[in-house]
Length: 225
Image (cartoon, rainbow, N blue to C red; front, side):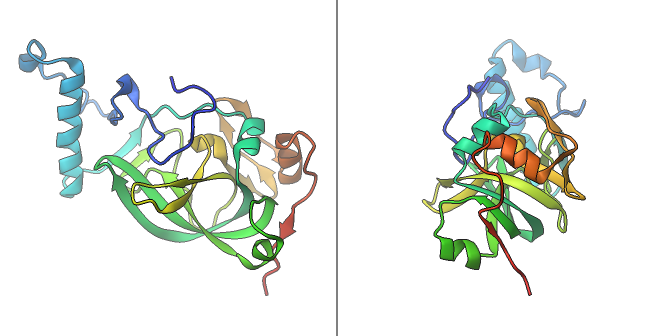
């Protein structure tokens, strides 16, 4: 299992058996290739199956949902400390979706910021930058059970880390996958993840607890006309 404090990068998903490959939950894809199993290792067979599956997905022959993955284990306190930005806001729309290394899915979202609770930006930037591009693991073809894609119009609190992708372009990624993304309904957090239960906390209480009392109100609240 990936250990705490693992550096957050694009491709931080290390999936089952350490191959960096996706494991399909459907019965069809889990069938063993009996005739070849004696000659090839499980790792080799897994790679071949994933390659074949990715080809079918790329050709539009199959859509994958309900993938399982192992995400870095962060508590809300650790995620707050690791974050470069902690924001609350609403998803505007999908900017783009794509694959890294041919088989690692990501989606870039246009995210309308309502409040900055932690920021490495200047005060002027906090007040003027009302929309950010935020990257999430998964896309509409390959979505993770533990980390469902954000939805347009829905409100979230995000713990974000700056990192560079394979093209040396800066990205804002969610720390620890689902540990850095929290749904908000009617001012309350209503999401429970494996490492922590935060249901029914108000946003203010949740972020004050996450900062261990260091932050008691938003650094900047975006005023929209």
